[in-house]
Amino acid sequence: MKRILFVLIIVFISTTVVFGQGRDIRRADRNLNRGNLADAKEHIEAAMEYEEVLEDPEIWLLQARLYINIAMSEEPEYRALAERPVDKADAAMKKAIELDTEDSYFIEIQQNMLFLSELIFNEGVDAYNRERWGQASDYFLRAYEIGKTFDAIDTTTLYNAALAAELGRDFDKARTLYLDLKEMEYDQPFIYSSLSNISLFTGDTLAGTEYIQEGRERYPDDLDLIFTEANIHIFTGDVENAEKILDLAIQRDPDNPSLYFAFGANYDKMAQDTMYTAEEREFAFVEAVKAYEKALELNPDYFDAMYNLGALYFNKGLMLFEEAEERLRATQDFARYEQDEKEFREIWLQAQPYLEESLNMIDEDDPSYRTVVISLVELYARTNQPDKLREIEELYLKYFGTEE
Image (cartoon, rainbow, N blue to C red; front, side, top):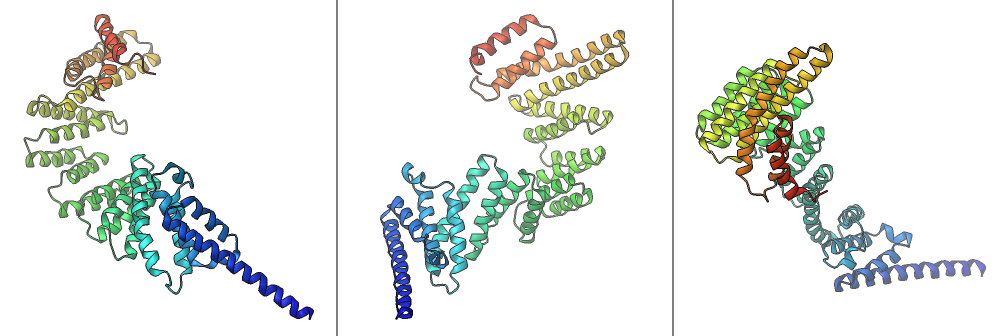
């Protein structure tokens, strides 16, 4: 009798467990369908207290549905039910798929994966806009992988994943994804410039050159690839070929002021980069001046070219000033310093008309307005122009003096 009683007790307990978890699952499903997310969450958590239910794909599918609904809800009280609901929905869906070995919930899983894919993509967009590059890349890649389960190859989403990885300096991941896109013949010339830039950054100049040459063969008229090839020549110190490549771009579109501006910005960057020799930087400075001047000749109202030209002269003077200060500390040669001072002061004064004109070209609510004002404050202070400095300081205090 005792043995029989023992068996009966075990059966009774087992039946109670099955009944309890089944009741909570049904109630969770019913509340989800009615939009009662808080109640649904309570019943799902109650059901998951039973160890047996954790091996049932249905409970994980319910949990995924719950978090999908939380993520999609606009109600603050429901949004507060879970942190990172999209991530939790994704984890639950992965578990449901793993356990559903007989495809009993195939249709339900597919339906919810469609919603989840969109939510994950949107998370990627949000992370990208917040410059959280690693998160953005992971989300985009996951959205792409989900799409593949529906036989949809979304190369644009994969490109987003690669670009975010590159911006986050995860170069191994970015390279792998870009190569996948290249294999798919994705029609985007930036793939080749990115692969080239990554190779250069990691020290593989040969691979960088090969990628850009391959890109130029496929997109011979793409200006970005032309500039990238020019950058390779600049990077390797071959300024002669760099100039030839940039000249080629201008020959193809000689009346485009934006092209001359890009030409100037390219050499402007080189002129500021101490990795180049003094001769190379001087060459770049001269070329940048010519390019900015040409852009302004074609479009006299080109603010970016006007300001950059002023900033180029100012930065040149600043470089000469720093060199003169260092030389004076080392030699105490004040006579030489007086000569140096004339030189960097003259360069600074060359910047003045461009910076002043750039201030006249934009409205006070323009985001660049403050930048120009601050540049002029520093210029007038360094060139000992008290009247001009007083005027610009009054302007600065008028518009920005109350800001922290």
